[in-house]
Image 1 (cartoon, helix red, strand yellow):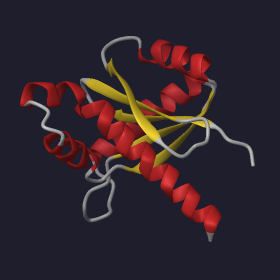
Image 2 (image 1 turned 90 degrees about the vertical axis):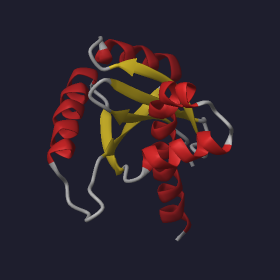
Image 3 (image 1 turned 120 degrees about the vertical axis):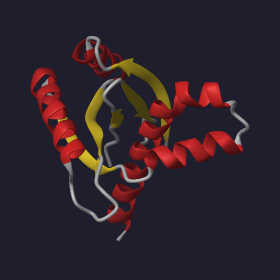
Image 4 (image 1 turned 180 degrees about the vertical axis):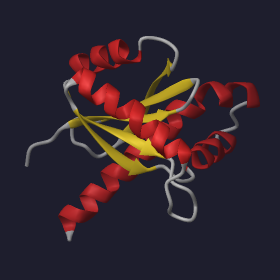
Length: 142
C-alpha cells in the first residue's frame, strides 16, 4: 500500500489553519496558520513542495442540519481557485464542530485564552484532517 502525505485546511476569512499528516497517513498534526489576505497560494505551494503533499483536504462548513450554506459556497470558490493555481487535488471534508473540538482540546490542556485564539485555526485543521484520515482507514478496513 502506498502512503501519501496530506495537508488539511481550515479556511477562514482572516486566517487559514494548516495541518499535515505523517508519512503513513495515520496522524494529523497542526502545522501553521496562514494570513488569508496574504499569498496563500505561494505559501501552500512551498509546503506542498517541501513535504511532497499528494492531496489537500479542505474543511467544508456544513450546517448542523447537513446543508451547505453561504459560507460553504465561499470556501468552495476559494478552494477551487487554489486547486487550479496549484495543480493539486483538493478534497472536501465535513468540518462540523472542528473549531469547538479544537477549543475544548486547548482548554483541557490548560492553554490560556489569548494563546487559544492563536492556535485554534491550525488545531481545527488537524481535527478536519484527522477525521478524513480516520474515515479513509475505516473504508479500507471494511
